[in-house]
Length: 444
Image (cartoon, rainbow, N blue to C red; front, side, top):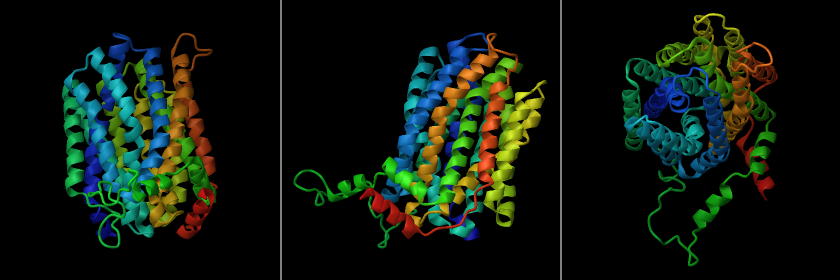
């Protein structure tokens, strides 16, 4: 176990640096958005709708891009494909590192929307597939938990830095960390999918022109496009395993809730209790610390004892209670107290990913993780279309009844649906050959 985990140290550092860069700007972005769109106001429907629109567009892009990148990484390798989202994520941060004026905010908004279509789910998908390539099946749950723990640790460190840095310095440090993550990954991370001769099965940058046919197309290029998954392939993959399809349903409703939380909670707290950047950072710091402890301590200890299926159900049940408590917040300390329950919510995604990884073979990990990520991304399209208008309505004076946290309560109900479905999962590994045969027959 220790040798496998130790072999992932460069991946963990890459995830930490990338997460640090992307997550440290979250406490500041709400204030920047409000300042650009509704200066001097604590409630702004335009900001809620615009953030929801961005989230939906990003989700639409990742539905297409994440399964595609995950599948291509099975051919070209995880490291080569990981370079793309890491490099693209630098661009929006550099813009706000230079200036936070309204015009620069709109440039950031547009470029962040475009680049996040590739980056949002791909980094997570590729790192999970890398772990699945490297770690034996029986040790994947702790390894996935430790990977998520490093992401939570980056969340803690990034939030702590944002708490004490100015807004300008926050984006400057984030841009530098994003560049460092890309360089570190390219220099130190080894490819996880070597061929039999020690080289990649399909190098993404192939020198020489001997493989090019007279018509300008190479056999390798044609073969790659044959391997790009269609919607039918992904549906067939889900149908090949009842457990995998159940995990996908749980992932959809859990991501629906998570997306709703992103679209609603900060605007709810700003309108209800006038939160600012520092208070958001304090709240997120508690979330990050509890998540780090949960994933680095609780998950490696509990997963071998009670299994990922029970961990998944516990995380969803406690997470729904967290949402219900937030929805009825009657004092400024209640969101802080409710946040302590979020520690269990961090058990959910590693458990889903571990369950999914056991349903496919070693040559299909990218496809399976990309499929789950694509479903989560689809939920992120639907979520803001539901929760952004709901949040804006119940925070306005036109609400049908007084319940500012009504949208947060509905998020809790989505998690309850995921919890009920999770109790029906009975995970059991199936053969890779069976899945490959089903998909090849369907594709034919």
